[in-house]
Length: 104
Image (cartoon, rainbow, N blue to C red; front, side, top):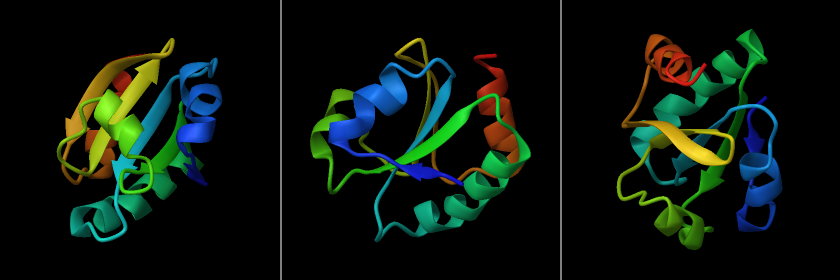
């Protein structure tokens, strides 16, 4: 299951996580974000090498701004507390796997 994070938990859940973390920057009103959500759920069930979380940019604008998220969905893989790979726009399962493989 994909975990919801906020500005209050971002540091612990993402930046200080021992595993790489795929962060889905999204908004509830975003159509492509809604299309990506079930793909992220499927990916999270199929593997455990990467933690998958999502953060609502409308509720956490300071985090979105800090990582220069200007379009959503914006998927960023963090490794060692730093952004290591990014994809913008709706992604299919193969695209998400390829994104993760860039940092493994």
